[in-house]
Length: 144
Length: 144
Length: 77
Length: 77
Image 1 (tube, rainbow over the protein chains, first blue to last red):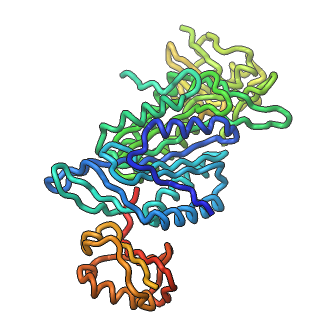
Image 2 (cartoon, rainbow over the protein chains, first blue to last red; image 1 turned 180 degrees about the horizontal axis):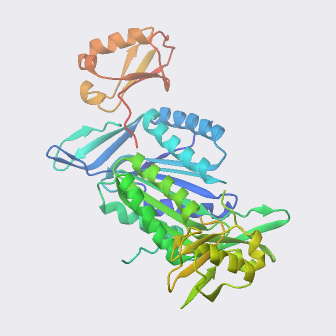
Image 3 (cartoon, one colour; image 1 turned 60 degrees about the vertical axis):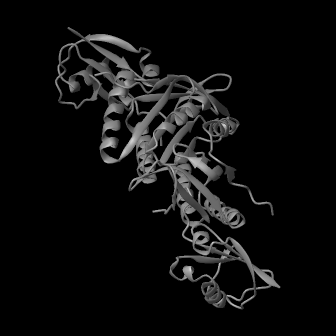
């Protein structure tokens, strides 16, 4: 089985998101879309400023796990479609690193599925973020 | 006081949404954005097909009410920003008629505020949709 | 001073009118009675009344230069 | 047959290594003991082990040609 790729090298651009939205104009059974975007924060950690996050993943495992999450969410919610994109490599502060996009006939399914998908991605996908400090140094990101 | 306008003539375009997302790249305290998009469905009603919705509003009252909703949501959630756009006039099936965009440091506030805002817009803003049928005829939309 | 009345949404189908002026009838309850007399199709319509952009209660007194709106259930979004 | 081991995230800082081969040690528990002997910095590290892309339990037997992954807590998104 060919697993759907979710990884993009570098940041996810606003134009990519716009194209993705525009593609749904032909799906006239959709009444509501929900989109979550993760953006890299310029956190201040003691006297250091985060200027980027460098993402790595255990890619094969992440894609298998994402496939399971997707199947479970499609079983649970009446969705028309769901698209997931996550960055690998360097994403600068202010840039988008995660794009989750769900669509359904009525809004509730799209909203609930999107939120559940974001939580699952953060908790279950083997992805790691290295917060790169201005100048030099880094620390490994921790999800709350 | 000058109330913020939320109304756009006709559909909200994917490019408009992209521009709105891109403008937040300088706000590097944001960690999560949530976006809800309402799209006009081509519902089949008995033997009639909805091809567009024609939106009208009691505009002054809608803007006052939206201001109240906005203030209440900003008091309740630690948001960085919130943007709301609703169409007036004709929006064709497949086009976007509602765009709600919330941003916050941590994702939960953005997600919860966006959902609450969408519910309030649907329940409390004096806006009416006339579902235009293919050929001729129409019916007034009802929110569930 | 006349007060201004606006109909919205499907109410305009029932009244065939979007806006008119009338003498101040006193309270919202008085107004409701008069407007239904003038537009009998409204008697079985669901609507709320806004007085100067706020939802109004039956016992409210209509001030001078008021704007009233008859609004069917909202269906935005 | 050797099995392949990969380290991820901050574990690579602790081991100075991202990948190596070893003889099949038997179970996941056996493997854990050996890998900590070889990389003592891992003894106080939080990690889970994936066996052929699935989270593995201590009593699982490692099959031929297995791929093992040592993974610190996830921090995607």
